[in-house]
Length: 133
Image (cartoon, rainbow, N blue to C red; front, top):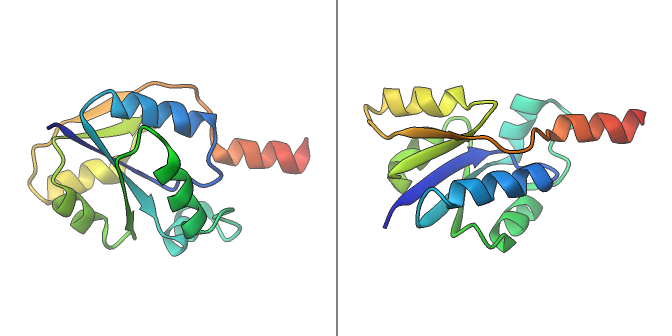
């Protein structure tokens, strides 16, 4: 069984997230999604985020047919998540996930990271469109 790991905020779940998870799932047999806890989202995205609280984001991800498991992480616990999941492959979106690559290097893991290219839809752009038209 080939285990795939993706991580992210997955705030305001949208079509771009769905296509990303679909592409990531196609890279293996078991997709584990690491979702950032609320404080981490605030620290990374700003004080007005997340839009949806962690419980909602977990429920949306868990309901996605491409996802086999959802795990919560913080900035500090992300290395523990990677070690616990022990993926065969990590997948990132086209905008990259430099932190995930740093963690793999810090842990001394030679796990390949594959980039998938999907529709370039970002939550920040959706929020701006809602607020400013």
